[in-house]
Image (cartoon, rainbow, N blue to C red; front, top):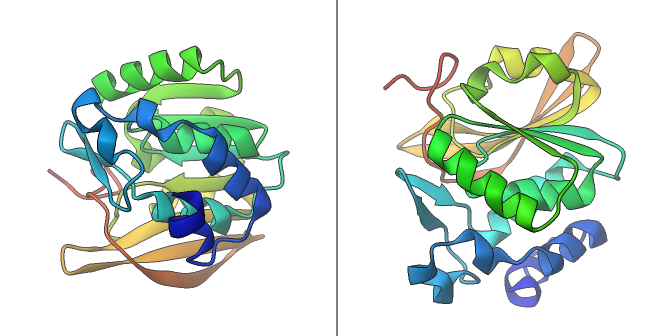
Length: 204
């Protein structure tokens, strides 16, 4: 997986590559589809949610530019796979998931893998997790109509937000970097994610 889907497609951050080699992706999928765990595709994890394609997880993680001392907010814990990758690469991960059953399942697995630097919360990820702000990096693993204002406000100076933005017709992966009160946007290419529901995302 790492050689053919990650390195061959231009991911070259050695720390990201090492994390992808280390985190056992097959543990984060249902037993019935474990044979597809390392395929080049997103996979269902229940509750109409998905585990991102390995390349997209790597692409988004690399775009955060983590060096190891950061405090990171993840919006959309899901299976916990992306959470584990982040935990390998930064100092602390704070992850918000709206579906309690997914959060609970992820917590059990992350504990089993002995991660000590992850805090999970059940709630509306579009409003962030203000108690632990500001964050050096924020990653959103579902598509929003626009970057939610509370997440921008919870970025530290110099912090990066990576988020899919768009609708059913198409989404763009966006990196927003904060400098003081200014926010610089970069488009990182097309992507496709499930919708981000919440106060500052899509409404049901």
